[in-house]
Image (cartoon, rainbow, N blue to C red; front, side, top):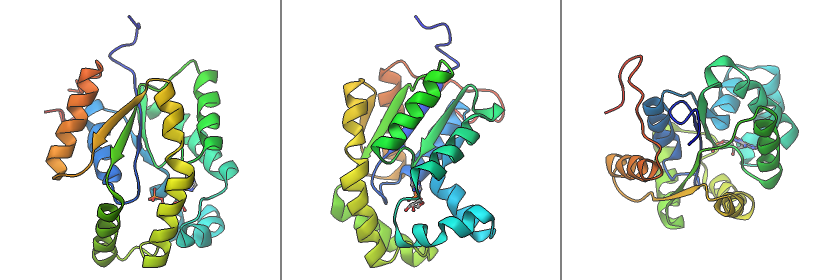
Length: 210
Ligand code: AMP
């Protein structure tokens, strides 16, 4: 029905920390030939690069708190305005609260664009804590300490999980069981998107779609 049925792939991936959303998000984005944009990665890169933005957000990110909406929304608007995001994108870690949901909606509406799906990756709390502890040992992320993990999960449950109701009301949520091997979860995501008519048909570039 829509004129651009094959060229539009505007996705969000939402899930608690430790749900595997970063890894799965990259795979989905690659298959659809759209950039994967992780606000957490952008903040971490700026912190390690010692940029002005990095200095402003460092203590916030290290405490596991949310960076102010003003800063985060502007960053996302700038990124989505770049040419590689014109045909679609996958946002990982944004929006994270109601203000960001509204900002994204306004931005997309101003461009005559709309989301195609919101991928919700569900994992039980115990499982995400166990995975985050594992990652803390492997990667040594400064925001993967016991105290900060608890804070980040609490913020997720209080501020981020409720935004899924908004998207559910719009019929956009694709609920995926995030427990299983990486490949199993990836297969579930592709099957669920395909069931909504969203196929990973990207065969340009390196022909990544299987
Ligand atoms: P993540 O890698 O997505 O867990 O993000 C790491 C950290 O970056 C978060 O704990 C926040 O401090 C910050 N951050 C990432 N995305 C956002 C966002 N959408 N809004 C506010 N802060 C964010």
